[in-house]
Image 1 (cartoon, helix red, strand yellow):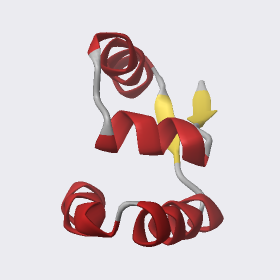
Image 2 (cartoon, one colour):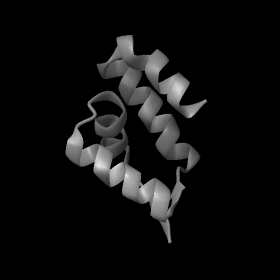
Image 3 (tube, helix red, strand yellow):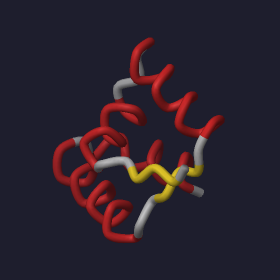
Image 4 (cartoon, one colour):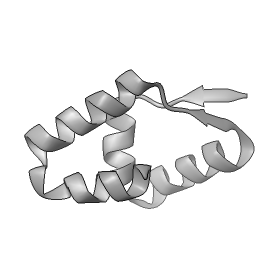
Length: 64
């Protein structure tokens, strides 16, 4: 199944990982196909730059 993850979930998963969110991301990426439309990636970058400017390198690394 293809699964699209909301920007808020991505922010939580990438910038504030925890046991529950890590388990959810592992399930999605191992059992399904993760779909990240360009508008979600763009919004993720915009939110990160605005709210967490010191974390933009982390997002670049993970998406690269």
